[in-house]
Length: 443
Image 1: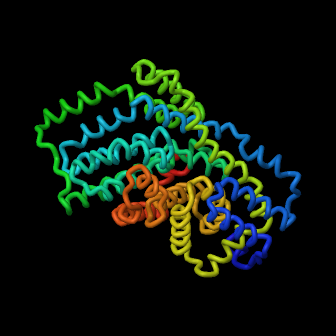
Image 2: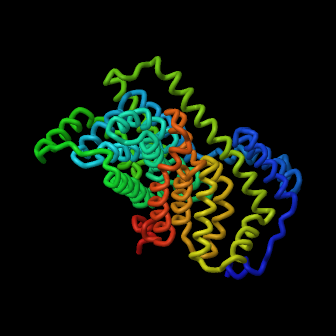
Image 3: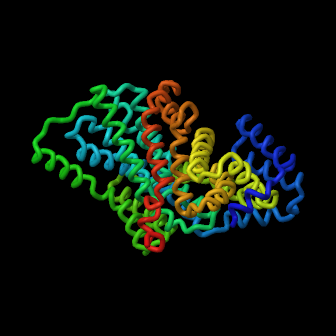
């Protein structure tokens, strides 16, 4: 059994591992771009250890990004950009607000829902935090919410960007671990909705305790009329997520094809509405290229790094170190979650996946966790890290667009972290939440 073999085979790591890790930490601390830090650390590891000839690095870099599935990444990024510039994202907010306006905390709930809608198209949490934050934070404050709490609510809702499919994070982890992105999208549907519901529940509880926002007094007929008007004036915005979801989950479109159709559909709608012009395209392409230019180099360097780590025995050594502390699967899962949340606090999703997925996967295998459940648990835990005080990435995004103190936002984010963590634990300990929608695993 792999479990017993790993327990009986300690791996001694030397400076051929620790020196490149130290170099990586120093470079990141000096604000060197993460892709460059990973690249330097990878080459340093190959040079010091000699496990692979440097002549293979160029070929490895090419093969790291020579995958058709990766074409979906720039397409979903561009779709999100077109969505904002064409004004379709505002239609999502109008419908979400009409849906929840009757309830206490209605606009807060609408903010969370529109984060989920945006996530179902762009697949990026930082983009969602910036786009939704600019639309909603000022109105949340007008509705009675304290400004730091409004920022924390948007930051939490934006975490669904990597948790609700389609998600760039699932495309990347599927590529790194050799798992179909469509399979991961299907598996992530229930966990993503559960996270969204946990954020909604947290806002309801906080609003009831503090009496920040009351609901609009209206009869059921008035509510239905208001909702119908919002849907009638903005139904076309839902064509895009409808195409993506139907295409991917019916199996008629691959994620890449769905991304391509989504871009074309969003552009066509923008032209028909007159909210998008040809002059908008250069800035949209530049904006999307900048984001894509951060993600793809990290993925490119993942292959030589993963190969070097495997040849040095780092995954096996990591498994041995943790199983030496405890051989209880429940304890080991908890330790993995803590590691992932801590990593999510300090780095974006892509480098975390590239570095940690190949290291933690053997540990998950050794305790019998299915690879699909492991992927869902990993991405969800990283998402919790994005709002975990005091270093969560989304906290910095909303702080940057509002000028609000990061510490004040972090304090208000604590209840969201708690409820999202509960869902993460459920996903980790209840495999059916990740596998029940997959016919081959639900039998």
